[in-house]
Amino acid sequence: MSAPEPIVIAIDGPSASGKSTNARALAQALGFIFVSTGAMYRGFAWFCLKQGIDLASTRAIGSALKRWKAELVLDHGEVHLEPKGQRRTKDELEASETASAASRVSAVPVVRKYMKEIQRECIRFGSLIMEGRDIGTNVFPASEFKFYLDATDEERNRRRNLGKPVEPKPEEKSAAADDLKARDKRDSQRAAAPLMMGLGALRIDTTGQTPAETTALILAEVAKRQAALAQSRRKAA
Ligand code: DC
Image (cartoon, rainbow, N blue to C red):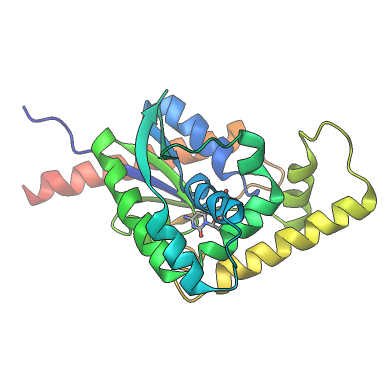
């Protein structure tokens, strides 16, 4: 008997819609590999910031990409795109400056092309839970398991402030909300693979849901789709 074909569960949606939390929980529940494609864009954006690249210049970003050497690494059930010989901290990658730079470099077509190829390569590690903005539309458009998570702006801003060691001041909250809005706008209005719902994706509004509720909903839908697929394959055989 041959081994089952690896599958990809695509989780897309705007910032702070619950993608990472749910994707990690799903990976754990199903024994699949977790891939954050946002982390890949952040990694390259961090490099551009360190190199002082003009983020308004598509050409400068393209030539930085040619100098960026990175490889896929599987570590504790997660695939990362690790740059060779560069040390960056989790805080640096998660900083809002890096996120905003990631949103800018990710609009450049050559960067998207490079990332798409490398993200498709991840399948060699096994079945994946891959989260991002264009997984169901562009990276793995043929996936039968697509989810689009969303939440109200208010809820997404609230989540971004959770986990901060000190309660942000009102002006900091307002600046962070503006930042989130600008990023969403850029990610959904760019010409190259903008954020949108993939064909056949299930949209889930996670506002007011606990992560466990959302994860359970996704798991149930995956099981339902798997059963439907198995049935249609049996019929076709
Ligand atoms: O998921 P994240 O917030 O870490 O992503 C950071 C930025 O990277 C996001 O604002 C847009 C970009 N991105 C993208 O364009 N396509 C993806 N598949 C993932 C992220």
